[in-house]
Structure formats: structure tokens, C-alpha cells
Image (cartoon, rainbow, N blue to C red):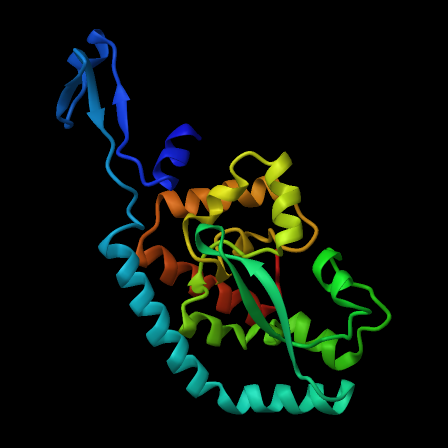
Length: 240
């Protein structure tokens, strides 16, 4: 946890060693600070050049997906318009990279009573206002397709921790150690926790652990693996 916090603060991180431990270190250069042996911990793999590679992949893949899925997007928009009237896009503030807020886009699946309900209600599953079109979009995850534009703009990534609303970020950060460390990376349309069924009314602590584990060991290959798992989950309709 302490090491993750140091990395999140962009600190140069040194691990202090006892003289005995210094003799047994293998494969790392032992340095000395004020006469004490220490080793310099490498920066996480998702930083530096890797972050630019991930961003380039996200932008290219999301733009290609938008073009390929244009007929699907148009059909969803028309269905929402006919079902619930004007205003097919739902906008909601979320917390992303480095704790910065952005506006997340979704197809509207129901009409919230007011902005306060939209910002503070945890789940609308089972809400009687949810009509067949909205329920279908939510069950198939088609309501999240407009977030491809969020990815193109740089607000989000295709893969990463799921971005949450500011109200819940403040709530979860106070009771879940490591929750805000998820903001070391852009929020994603899908992620390691989601493909393991951790969405909706599931353990926030476990989600944070999965998300931080993903960030610690990030690679482009892991992103591709998660994207393939996501496609399988959506096609099979199996969220668990």
C-alpha cells in the first residue's frame, strides 16, 4: 500500500534494507542513503512510454469501433428516442485519471427524478421506470457504447478501473483503503474487476483490489485479454 501511494505521488522510491538483507539482494543495484543500504524500486509498467502506447491503442481502436458500430449506435438512439422522448444521451460526472472529473456519456435508459438522484442513487435495477428498451440496453451493455467517444477524447480508456461518481468516490475513499489509488490510470469501459463479475452491488473493497492488481501488472497483452473476455461475457450474457 505504501509503495503504491509513493508511485501515485510520482516519487522516487527507495526500499531501505538491513545490512543482512543487502547481502542477499539478487539482481538489483544496492545503493546507500545516509550510510543505509537501499534499492531503487522501478516505476510501474503503466507509466512513461507505456502510457502513450496505451493511449494510442485506445484512440485508434475506439475510433475504429465507432465507425464500425455506427448503424448500431443509430438504432439504439432511435429506440431511446421513440421510447422515452428527446435527449437520448445521458451525461454524468465521473472521476478519472488523477482524481479529475469528466462527463461520461451513455444512452439514457430511464429518466431520473432530478440531478441529485442521478448523482447519488447507487442502482436502478428493478426500478419500475425502467422500460423494455432501457432494460435491454442495460442488459446488453449497449447503453455504454457512447463511451467510445469518451475514449477518443482521452477521458477514458477501453480497459481500466470503472470510473465512479464523485459522491461515491468520497464515500468509498473513506472506508476502503486503496480505493483512490485506482485513479493512477484512466477509467475504463471494461476492466479486470468487471470481467470477474464485480459490478453492480458487489464488494467495493474487492473491486479496488482487482483494479490495483491490474494497474500494478499492466501490459498491452493484459488489455487485449480483458477485451476478449468482455466480448465473450457480453455475447454470452454471463456477467459472473
